[in-house]
Image (cartoon, rainbow, N blue to C red; front, side):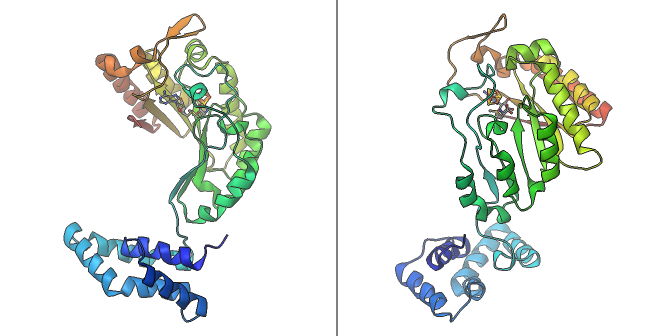
Length: 321
Ligand SMILES: C[S@@+](CC[C@H](N)C(=O)[O-])C[C@H]1O[C@@H](n2cnc3c(N)ncnc32)[C@H](O)[C@@H]1O
Ligand code: SF4
């Protein structure tokens, strides 16, 4: 999908001159393009070499000690959107499904409070696809379970360089055939949310069968065979109930042969107010937040980092979103 001349010029104003277009300038440049007097690439050059852009660059350099010049040279060396790159966002996040196969939901997840759940239609993603070549990361998740979308494989196929795309998943629907299709498509990565190192804790938090997830991850790694992608990460959303399992989770990842372990804390803001009963346990969001247990948190994280170093597996701890 090609953008119109006026949209192209409007974006030039924002990206090069960092300001909205004035009416006279906009119509003048659109007319130049329409008459064929200038190509888009030449117009971009003209914008970049205009006194206004040069002055802007000078101001940036004065403010940032020459970083703007470095960025300009880098852009020149790597090519611009006129010669291969496209205008548009570098990171694209698409919630392919806001439905989930885990019902009732994982205890800390506010999906049920998020309103009407649905899958994004393939036709909508097709409209976004012209932005894909310019992006460095395409994340196919939000709240909900991406594997619920029946068009997921076709959506992934719309990404030209699939090594830069992936999604978070509970992996309960990651059967052998699904895994094989993801591998064949050349998906870049998959982040499996587990939140526990034992079946008991998994059952409490995710209300499901831990062994099934383990089998599905093993199946994916087997389907990947000698290929490097999809990289497989396993993820733990930390809370009081599972923090003690953090070191064991690292060892579990090493034993499964995943590429990386990811930890994150529960969001500080949540709409979940009332306690939730789950398999003989009562989850209370506020009292599960680790800010209430600094020592418990520190000891477990230190032990987890030690386990990661021992196993030689990368551990990434994302603090709050
Ligand atoms: C909402 S899920 C959606 C993708 C997929 N269904 C899954 O579970 O991975 C994405 C991630 O958010 C995490 N998550 C859920 N509730 C959270 C909360 N209250 N705070 C922080 N992360 C949360 C999950 O553990 C999961 O890793
Ligand atoms: S699997 Fe993901 S989206 Fe579904 S309830 Fe759990 S955290 Fe929420």
